[in-house]
Amino acid sequence: MVFEKAFAEKLQAFPGFKDYCATAVLSQYFFEIQDLGKIPAGHFFPKPGTDSRLLRIISKKQFGNSKNDLLFEEFTEQLFRYKNKNLRNALQHCESWIKARLKASNTDFEKLRENSKLMETKVYLLEINQFVEAFNTLCSK
Image (cartoon, rainbow, N blue to C red; front, top):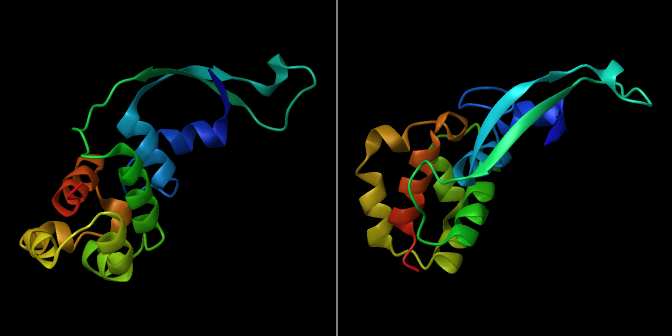
C-alpha cells in the first residue's frame, strides 16, 4: 500500500520517537509492516506536496495477545492521552475508565504496581509488549 511519508513514519515509529503514538502501537500490534521504499512525489500526477512510502502490511500479531483486542485499542488510546507521564501516573488518571471498562479490581492494580520498573517508564517509552502486559494484568474480561 502507498502512504504519505509522514503517515508511514507514524505507523512504523518506535518508543521514544516523536511520532510514537497509539496509532503506532496498534498498527504494529496487529500487523507486520515492511517498508519497501520511497516513491518520489514526481512519480504522481498531479504532483503531491510530499513523497510517499510503499509498505507491505501483513496481518500478524508479533507482541503477544491481549485478552480483548477492542478494549486493548481503547486502553492504548487512553494511556496516550498522558504520554509524557510515567505509567503509574497515567493509570491514576485513567483509573475510573479502567475500572469501568476493564472491570479491573484494586488487586489487579496492585499486581501491576509490583513491577516498579514498568510503572516508572513514561508512556511514550513503553514497548508494545509492555502495553499488552499492562492491559492483560488489568483486564478481567
